[in-house]
Length: 265
Image (cartoon, rainbow, N blue to C red; front, side, top):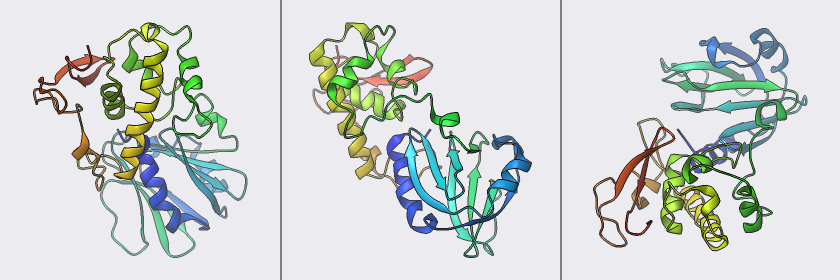
């Protein structure tokens, strides 16, 4: 699933073709992806202009002139494409948003897990998300405060979007490695120094991911290069680039987890 850097890359790529554009219509080819009553979406969206496009966690958030907000969550295989109206549709396009310049914003989703919401109050969709890890006012002490009274394994906690927003499998593995912390550690056992190291490591790998335009994977999200900088993720059995020990793989919270058993004891 695309994580914070991949979604941030999407947002930056769509700002040029989408800012100031007005929606003129909606065609829904896969109703299950729409989380707003379809008649309501078709009535409220046309005529609204895109005033701002940002990322919140793993959501793309279109702030509209009529006061509504359009959210898209790409889930496992979603893509958002701006294409001329006359260009043939890919067979996996699920929703078509007509624009005022003879183009369309097309929501393509091979696995059909993606979701679309149109709401008056953004909190209806993202109100339960945790803080953004890269915000300038999110300090190391704020990060440490999140762990107060927390129990459970570290990596599943980092991937809990209500705990902190945007971090998924790749960047949790890479951040834990850079901090030298085993991903299966109990969250309450981390020292102040370890929490400080983890805070800076997560921000470093997320920023590096954004610079690289994310990590290309699956044949769905393409164009990124962060996979060329993986230290542990998806490198099971390969030598650690720091000490040479074979990278290990375990399952935590139902997800494959990669770490160096020497560097992350």
